[in-house]
Image (tube, rainbow, N blue to C red; front, top):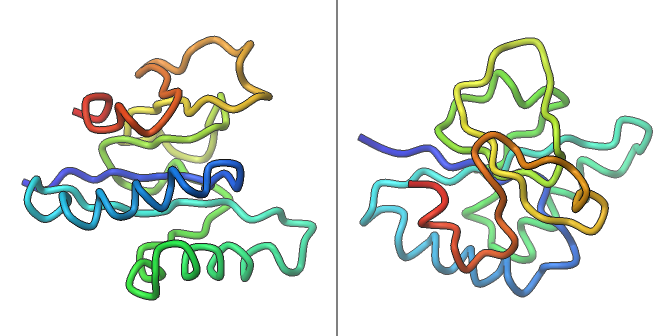
Length: 130
């Protein structure tokens, strides 16, 4: 069975870590049964935000990763096993199927931990999603 792993809103402050993460996922996901998606919410007041997110993924991960983008203002209907997101509370129209891991960011450090835990960097991603 394939494990769905969803990475939300790629933070621009961790570009190098994310590039390494992309390389790791590219090498490991098929062997270990991961299906990786980028689930991201565009800023609805920006006419360029959605396109910039696609360009960011294309630049840092390559064209083959663009098809893995899920662009939505409500992440709760997106099916998966784990959502790693820097937003402390994910709400929407449905009960999510995924566990929420909170990825540390300067603005969320005072937040209570998401039910599935926190991730402070990408070094422990695999242990955290199992």
